[in-house]
Length: 425
Image (tube, rainbow, N blue to C red; front, side, top):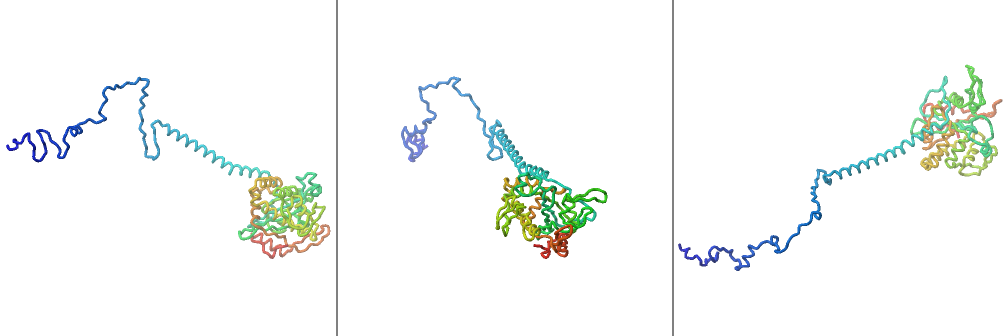
């Protein structure tokens, strides 16, 4: 009851100073402090007296509902809900795919189709002859490869001005100016060997009715005989191959022939070949007049260089120059500057395929094999010579050294490297 006596009074603790009003200890007294507690927020205050105008209907923009952006589990992809972005991406991907397909087709066409077409077209340009015929007693196939390379004096492909300029004469038919063998042993350790066959080699001919004679007579189309069946057999590629095979026991696997016109064209197609005569040479019959020393010869000059006999050893000197020329031609034709230069490689292929005569079973790839085989380096030699007598009704001939030539041929039959003891300068 003692508390009732303090109503309206002041509590000694100062918690309240009048009935019903409680104050926080230490708070400021007065109306301002009280007003701060109950004053309305500024955002809720309104300006009295202002009016708001409702805009016309045409002034109000149409209400467009914003579509929320959705994400899929693929990071970076956003969808707007209309599919426009998806269609654009698909169109871009389709266009990129089409461009890639077209580019691949063009690339395959350039890399595969064009070379394949050019190979087939060039292969079809080769002239073919049935040179490698089977006959009774023909040598069996042996290891290694043997190419017979024949340079004929055929004037095919030469016009009157070229015949006069090159001093080739107008002899009818064809004879051999060059007979060489490219022998590729059946081992990677041995280099290929170019073997010259003297065209005056005295051997039995494979033409009916003819006995032993110069080997080039078996190629002359004017030399003819009659076989046991009454058919006429004249000289040519097949009798030449058979004559050599029977005399040596070595089987010929590929046949390559080129005439004078093709010879000149090949040399000019590669830009000439460098040859190094040790002495000046002059031979009006071959159209040759050159100085001593290394020099680049064009087709006409090179033809005279390999044809002339105006030297002390005549035909033996000539076959040495033929090997020198053939090695230089192969080196120039297989050089990267020729193979990868279309202004030289294309004319070379066109000239070669138009002038080369090959066996019916030979293809352009065999010529390429021959070229590449000699690119890595070749040895050059000739069939060993035993004597060079002059025989009645035949003239000056070359007789093979029986022992050394058989040593050479035995190695070729076995696919082995030719021993140095069988080499002929």
